[in-house]
Length: 193
Image (cartoon, rainbow, N blue to C red; front, top):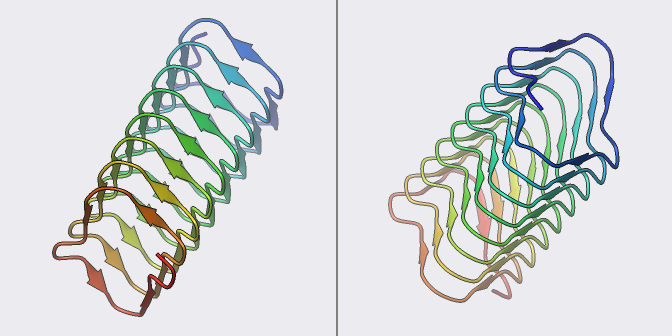
């Protein structure tokens, strides 16, 4: 499915869709809401450099192979609640202008948010990072919540910036958690972790 450089001027509904081939939405523009509720990408899903001007809804979406959102821009809320990423999930240099909701998301392999910008609240409560969770040089301008998140392998927050609040209460870090040169400019809590 090739939707590269497409411009969707109305709401897009891919709810419960099953993508059996590589799905490319690279450089696509979603001018209205993008609905991918309960969709299943059985091959690679490419959304690099895509622009979501309204809500992007990937609630309970399953990404069976690699999911790429490199340099994607989410102008309104981005909902990835209970999404399942079976292979690598790459959000490097993505911009979340409003709330980013990854509550209860499962990252079975590597999750990368290097140099991503979270301009409003970033919610990762209950998320499971089975392999490496990479947030190097990410910027969290408002609240960052990792309540009860599970980091099974390496959690890397080197040189990340938490401008307001960082909450890791009851989070589980099984192996190394790296916060070298991380900037905490507001409150930070690891209560119960």
